[in-house]
Length: 282
Image 1: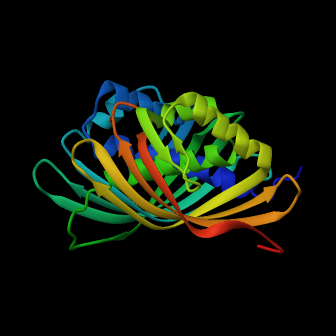
Image 2: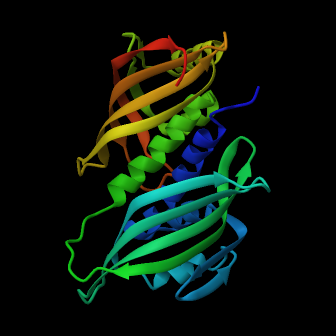
């Protein structure tokens, strides 16, 4: 079947990785966090910036040392993902970068990222090229922490991809040990066998689907958890080849061990805004 939502689904994978790219710079360095940074890069990754060009991810620890003690925030403003003719993925992005250094000097720039990623079968893609170009300077600014947003968005995009391509095994990394999911139909899921059954039920009814989000609000509870409020527009094709739509409101509590690749879902409550329904067109 031709997957009409292929680009939307691949975009979730790319953005899951892109929002991970910034996290190592936004919290203190540890061996595990640097290892997680290497996890998103191909072995021969090429990174170009005003500082020059580096090839490969070996020696990343030494390159990061210069940023020790810096406060960094990367506010992602615009992203565009494309599937290239050679099968690679491209991401063009614009961000606002904010920085306070140990001597209390402050800097803020707008930056444009041009990147390429290598898709992998049944896995997250890897960055093969990143080109960073400054596009402007911001003289006056108030520093705002971006880690909570980048952490939550990387989780959210990976979660949505896995909902669109149900894979119970992959979800293990995204679920807290004591998770509790309250679905829109009133069903409560608190154990992995029930979760696996839910994934199977989606696959048995839906051929392919995509999610886009609105009204995202993130609260950093400052106890290694995030509260997330978000609305999802869902589009899908059911097994009868009918087009379907729905809108849902989600409330999440995510637990956050900074040493892990992703935050984890502890509680989820879903309420219906627009019921799941067959439509003639999207």
